[in-house]
Length: 225
Image (tube, rainbow, N blue to C red):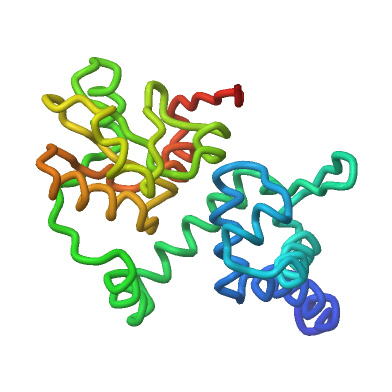
């Protein structure tokens, strides 16, 4: 049998596959992929957003680059990182869903992180329809640089940390649909809880910008002024 006579080649092939798995075997590297799914960033920005020092962030990014998951470009002395393709984003999204379905510890960890979720959710399809009709306010509560890199058309940018101080910028008589990075992003959950406590009608998009992009729904970008 050919399979039995080419064991070394087969092992090398599967070891090559395994290198990709090894690159994903770190919670911090997965967090970096989550951030890069929102748009291109410098090493400094990624280190700050992920709570890592610059040396550790750089090492994790080099591991992801060697596995082919991220690509880079240089601008002067700065290195900008981005996902190597939409297929990497799809793999990342699928990995999370598979883990939630088949790994017993994930649902409890998810609930501990995201908190109690009593708010009504809204699907991407419904939001797309209602936003086009103009009967909801779409609120992006991610950091401003992520909003600029790509957001749901017509969405307002109001980072969750600024929400309480700037709530008067939102209309009082219109339902607010909040979204952030993706299904496991805590920012939208916190924002809905805050808006509800302040008497506003707020619901959360069932997932977020990652899944919106992967569904090939419209995305707007905005230049920094």
